[in-house]
Image 1 (cartoon, rainbow, N blue to C red):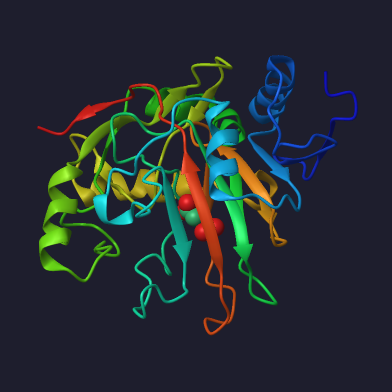
Image 2: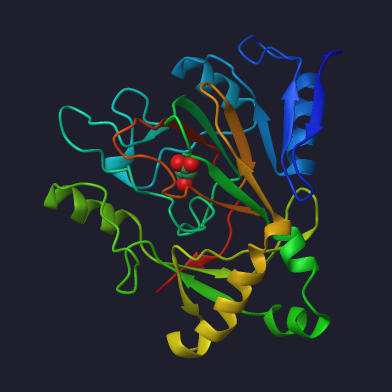
Length: 290
Ligand code: SIN
């Protein structure tokens, strides 16, 4: 029993800091259960300043489910395929392919039919100023819509596609043409409902993804844009957002089923930002685009 475990809210909408538990050691089932409860309640949990090796991060992540190997092959860590590095540092003397990812609001893996439940990001290096990550609460975004808007979107589905013709930016994670082609083949487009019932809390949340959502199924891009742009603006109102200002070794775990996030370009690019992400395999959600 983790008697000293403390959960302190970080903002009105979401986010809580968890202290008083050494997450590098083997954890007891009741400790994991307390962490899981905090994560389900606050959507984003922060473990401040925990020095972790990749092995420790992988072991801790596994307490919450099975780990995903990233669907985009070129993003897998060479030694630990369940880890992917988000960084602007040079790798093998070459510019990083992940230095500019996450600049638009998204939830991880919404372009797959098993979007990950959780992502865990561990900070290894952070610029002197900025380099933050912002999160929003998609339950609140849904719950604060009018009844008429809720009814309008209840049955809608969207086409999500990481590499589709409307991709903005046109994603490529490698400068190797053969690998880029393999990435595209591994990740076809999917159809996802706009309103998602969270499988653990039973609450309804908006499930949208400005990074990969192309249009509402059955509508043109122009028709669906009027609805989607409103929902995007509504979802990220300041009162639904928590912005995490990283300290080195912070570990942050979030729920992709009811929160989006973005990493703004708010730092000097000649300073290193380095994060390692582990991602938990999700429940089936949506279907493949035919
Ligand atoms: C991500 O989008 O998973 C990375 C977020 C970040 O770099 O802060």
